[in-house]
Each structure stands twice: as structure tokens, then as C-alpha cells.
Length: 254
Image (cartoon, rainbow, N blue to C red):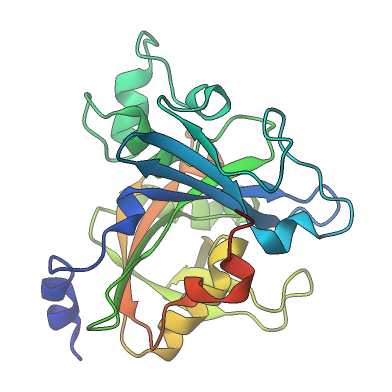
């Protein structure tokens, strides 16, 4: 399947669950790697949070403050305070520039901001990732995510990010010799190493690579004075044989 066909199909009838579900992840203090903890969902009558069943049985697991009952499906009409406080304030003077750096309009709502920014806060261990879309009829899938590891790339690569434009196409390269994570997948532009796919998405992205041609394109690429976590926002479009997120490790506890 050609790249042009992939691009045209991206505006089709794919299930748009990315607009209604965020994967809540947390960084392990020992390994520095992020792991999926649960889901934050936008539903017709509010918002829901649920833990993953595979997560709550892990040794040393600690629930989030305010979500101590790991077997409960939490529901609230308005966005939970612990997530709402991750959205930049409406009166912040830097809000317009912040939204522009994420490719968002000035009137973007809290959910849009969380989806694009990951709810990032300096020194915090939590990040939210938009759930990839999946169309069971065609196998088409799309994802949007921020590149990880940008703060550790070479200066020349950092400068290269600043030259990228929206819709520029990049590549994905598995890195099986990575000692921290042999499943790691690197983001490159030719031979320039720009960062990594977030750990919670590496299984999914590996499925996309196995599915055939893909398009990894730039949504926004920000200058070096931007926080490294927000430097490079990407869109992935491809095919998968089956929905990665139907596996047992993605089942909820409630």
C-alpha cells in the first residue's frame, strides 16, 4: 500500500477512541521507564478512571492519591481535580504560545490539552497518552504521541528538530541492543536520532511496523528553548493485524 493511499485513508471511518480515552502512565523511579497504570475516559455524562488489572498486582504498586480503591471504576461529572490541574490555566500569559507549540487552537478545551501535552508537569512522574485509533474492518490505525528521550539526544539532533516542519515524514527504527529496553523503538530522520517511542506504546508500534507501510509525520517541532518533553509531537498512520489493546495486559480491573 502506498504512502499516498495511507494518507487518504487516514480521514476515513477509523474508530476515534483517541478522542475519548487516554492511557495514564507513570515513570518507574528505578528504571526511569514509563508503564501504563490505567485509563482516563471521557464518557457521555462525564469522566471515568480505571486501573489496569495487570498493574495492580505488580509488586510495590501504589495507587494514585484519591484513587485508593483499585477495583473501582471512578466516575465524575467534571474532570477529576488531579487531572484537571495538569491543564494550563486559562489566565496564564504563556497559554497562547503553549497551545501553539502543541498545534492547538487558542480555544482548545481541557481534554484536547491533556491529549496533546500528556499533562506534563516538571518533576512529575505521570504522563497521559492518547489511545491509538483502530478500525477493525480495515486494520487501519493512527496514533499521536510526544517523542521521549529528547533531552538526551546530541546537540546537532536537537538543532535538527528545530528545522522540522509540520507534515515532514520521519522513520522508526527498532533498537534490540538497547540495554535499558531491548524493545525500544527509535525515532529518526535518516541517520539523525531524534528520540524514542514512549515505552507504553512500543508493543503497539512494533505491530504497526509488522503491518507494512506506515507514515510517521511531524505535528509540531519546537525550538530548543521548549521543554524537551514537548519538543516533538508526532502522528503515526499504518496498519495492524489485530487490535494491540485487546490483549490481557490492557484489561481493566473494573
